[in-house]
Amino acid sequence: MKFDTKKLARIIVSCLDPKFLDEPYKGLWEPSNPTFGFCSLASEAAYFILGGPESGFMSYATKDENNTSHWWLQNKEGEILDLTAEQFYLQGSKPPYERGLLGRPVGFMGMRIDVGNPFGFDRKPSLRVQWLLKRILETNNISYTESQIARFRESFLLKVKKKSYIQLK
Image (tube, rainbow, N blue to C red; front, side, top):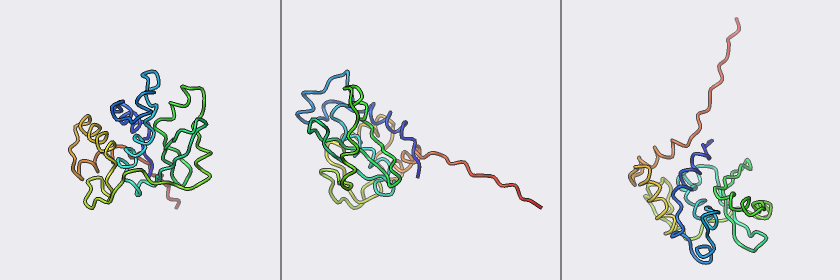
């Protein structure tokens, strides 16, 4: 599946709020670097919105040059979905993807089994991501039901044009 990741990023980033951050990120956050400290939250929210394992994306994490954790999503084709990469570029550096690719995908913190989760797979997001997802859904006038969330997810699918063939006689 191919997704409109720019649209997804706009929606998620617009709903980020420093109140969702834990220390030390909360104390270090500045409006001039609005995605700083939100990598795990934004990545986990994107993972749930896109449908979890069925999206083809997996979570990756590593430490940057300051020994700070960084999280992003990546699929088997190597496509990286990092909604907070901007935080590195604003500080004159690059995201530390190569460090994370030495290992394997990692699971998000706090995810628990939750059969019947409206996001369509049997996991519950961490508490802070639940708050963020609630804000995202409310901001976009979407109720917390499986059918509404599925429709929201479909809005990020890119339409692939079918090739037309000319039949030769």
